[in-house]
Length: 487
Image 1 (tube, rainbow, N blue to C red):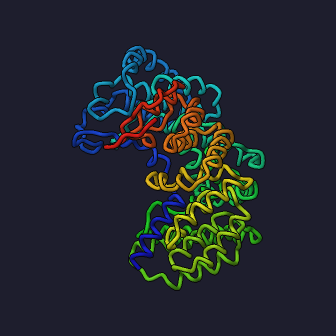
Image 2 (cartoon, one colour):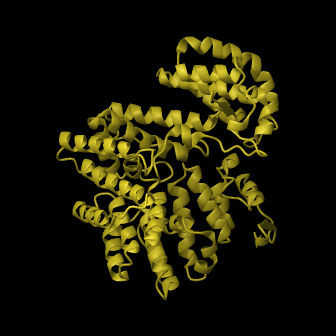
Image 3 (tube, rainbow, N blue to C red):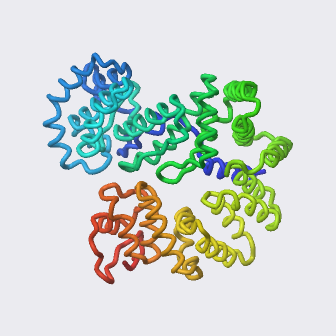
C-alpha cells in the first residue's frame, strides 16, 4: 500500500492539481527568517499607504477610480523608475522595503490593468502591460492579509483568463489559439486559466459553456503555446482545493458532475469528467489512509469502457499498470493503443520509459524506443521527451541515441514551438547538455532576458551568453555545482 500511495502521489503531480490563480501567483520571496505573516504591521501595508490603496482599487475594479490611479502613478513613477535600474530579480523582503516606490507603482499598475480588463477595455491596458513587463517585472503587491502576489504573474493570468472567457462565451473555441508567450509567466497562466474556468463553469452549472470548452479542447487536441494539452487542464480543474479531508466539497462536486451528465446525457466529456473526479477522489482517500482496492478496480473498468478518446485515459491506464506491476507485454499493449492515437502526447512516452527501466535490459529498451520516436512522423517528440527526463540520465542515453536523430528532433521542436519561451528554454538546455551548442543558440536566441533561472541553475553564465546570441569560445568552461562542463 505504501508503494501504491507514493506512486499515486507522483501520478497526481503528472496530472497537475488544480488550484486558485491567486495562490499560484503568491511569490516565494526569500528572506532571512521573515515572511508575510511575521512582518511588522507598519511595513508595506500601512493603513492609507499606496499598497493598501492599490489593493482596494484591485478589489473594486471601478473605472471611476482610474483617475486616482493615474494621479498616484504620476507622483511615484519617477522614483520607481530610478529604482528599477538595479532590480533585476525578485527581491527579498528586506530589499523590497528599500524599494517601496518600485513595488507601489507595480501594485497600482496591477489595479489599473485589472480594472480595464474587467471593463472590457483591454486595448487601453496594453500600454500599461508593456510598461510593466519592461520596467517593473519584479514588482510585488501585498494584500491586507499580508499575502504577496507577483504583479507580472497576476497580470499574465488576467490577460489569459479574459481572452479565454471571451472565446467560450462567444462559442469560438473551435478557432481559438493561445498567443505566443511574452515572458516566463504565460505558460503557467495559459494552463491555470483553463483549470479555473472549468471549475467555475461546473460550479455555476453553466454546462453549455463547459461542454463547449471541453469538447473543442478534446476534439481539436488543442494545446497551449508551450504544447500543454488543454483537455488535461479542463479535467484537472475538476477537483476542490480542500484536499483529502474536504469530503463535503467532494460530495458537492460529484453532484455537479451528475447534473452535467443529466443535462447532457450523450456527453462523452461529462462521462470522462465523472471518471476523473472519482480518480482524484481516490487519490484523496489514499492520502487519508483508506483501503481503495475495490474502488480502484471500478475506476479502471470505467476507463477501459470509455476508451482512448483523450490521452489522459491511456496515461492513467499506464500508471495503474505500473502500480499493479503488470507484465511488460500488458503495459506495452496499453502504450501501443494510446500512442497510435496520440503520438504527440509526451507524458505517455515518459511513463512508458519509466516502466522500461524496471526491465533487466531497460536501458537498451529505452534507447530503442527513443530512436524509433526520432524516426517517426512526430519526431520532435524525441527531444521533448528527453527534456522531461532527469538530467543525470542524459549522459548514459546519449551514448546509445543516434545524434543525427536528436539534432533533427531539436530543430523541429525549435521550429514548431517558436512562440514558447518555456519550450525554447528546455530545448536550449537539452542541446547544451548534449553538446549541441549551435542548436542551443538557435533555441535561446529569441529568449533574451526571459531565460528560466530555475531550469538553468548552475549554468547561468551559459544561459546569458546563449540568450544574448554570443558565440562561446571553444573549450570555455562553466561550473555546474561541483563539476565543470565543456562548452
